[in-house]
Length: 298
Picture 1 (spheres, rainbow, N blue to C red):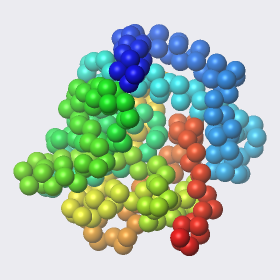
Picture 2: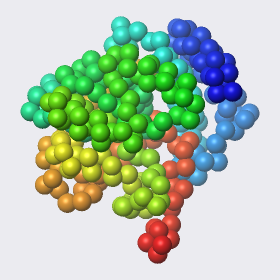
Picture 3: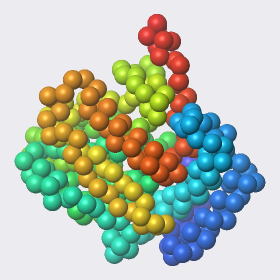
Picture 4: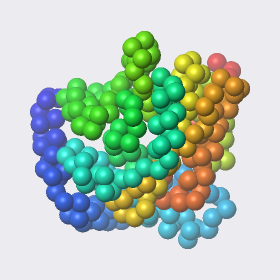
């Protein structure tokens, strides 16, 4: 059954991915109308997230952000599909990086770098193409997909420009191997996801709401004494993005626990507050709000 589902769905994805971006965005516009105005997909989730994150904004302001959020959400979905077949020439026109010289100098002085980013703008294209501007191997840490055929194709697709996907459970082994073999590497983590409550070590405010925070990136940085950088990706216009690589710290061990994570949250919040419509509000960002006492008392 898994194989049959894979053949049917992937065939459609591949056929869509070879279409020009103009046609994909035309399809995106149609899907947006269906998704937002007719189906109402996750509209309540987005609306609740925005109300919690921006209590100072009026209903009219929140509604405008809500509509822009859904339009961007569908655009990102189509751009993810395009990732399967997009050429290096096309993505180089649509995605640019800033401050790469300093990061490349930093990578030559260390065996590894930890990259932190969030679900903002197009993080998929950023991690897909970063190997073309960074002079070290790039690894994206991800959760294995249940369908083994999709999982295999996803890893192959993301490695077309040199990046590698590594399951969360295997990242320590990969880092030990690279460190032993003197392979300069950069490890990318999307660090704004909600951790499993039973494995939560740290709570702090995100957009003014006290929530459990992922601390895996900071833990890895301190374990191997790797500098930590933040990938600030912004949308220039539809289908075009620019990433600025910012150094959070070159010496993570000099920071107290969770301070590096707080630096990341500060950067991400700044982006969100500036242009909230490019953040992924379709996920239940604050689903664990008010549960910190439940965890502590267990």
